Length: 317
Ligand code: UD1
Image (cartoon, rainbow, N blue to C red; front, side, top):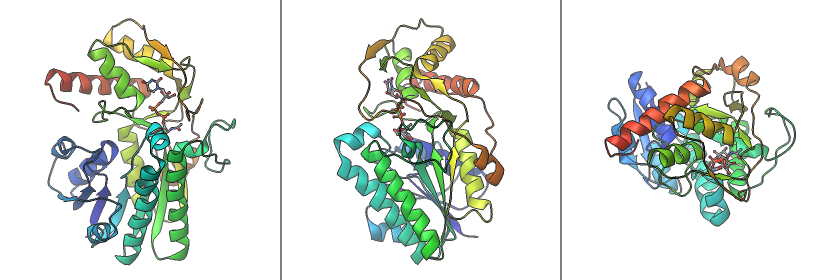
């Protein structure tokens, strides 16, 4: 039985993927440079696995990590629109060149399939809703451009070489272990930890912008299905809940769960922000048998509890 390599495995989403694979008894290898990932996420994984500290920009390190692997879950990235606006070259190197390195290593090491963490940012701000995989793309940030470059490399490798690739366009993923402490953290951990610590959350814009928030457990399910479903090589699938919620509305729901008043600060909209993001998940459901297992509100409650527990035990999720 081959190994399963999870790049970025000390990060938020990838550590949940690795956790599931380990629990199912697979041989798991994690590759991470611990720049945005954390050892505490590795410690949360329920079983044994191999850990290689390395960087996806280092071609020979990636090649070594891919040895004897059957599937690579390529999740390593610098996942931030604002960071990409500040430092587009670094985000390109990690997200685009890093993906090319992973694909080259997969080709050279005879890996059967690469599952690539693509991004809903590829849809930009075009008016068609909900977003279907076939919609015209629009790159409004260097982050979107770099993740899309990775997609194009995936498609080309499936065409040119004997390596299967499946791309999963993640929408706004949330759940336990999502880092709340970086200036580039995602909105849900920022809002939840602000409220738990008695600080005022900030809404950029008027809060009417909307997102399709998807619980990390659903993203894990999509990854496993993408790895094992036959005849889906070179395809791309949305991974989302198929429902959208406004940012202000989402904050109200968190306030309800925590039983605190809704009293945010408002700041100007962020550069590069898209207004609305909402996925059509029918192709993912049809081809991969993907079925979100948990509703937004239930997942929000689980996530809030996880942050509350970790703050009260004085360590981060
Ligand atoms: C974007 C991408 C997503 C990508 C992610 C990586 C889109 C639609 N999505 O997410 O695919 O994986 O970047 O980071 O392009 N906000 C506030 N207050 C805050 C923080 C954020 O109001 O304190 C707002 C933002 O302005 C935005 C929304 O919340 O409108 C979501 O922001 P964020 O969580 O950073 O993710 P996106 O930028 O949507």
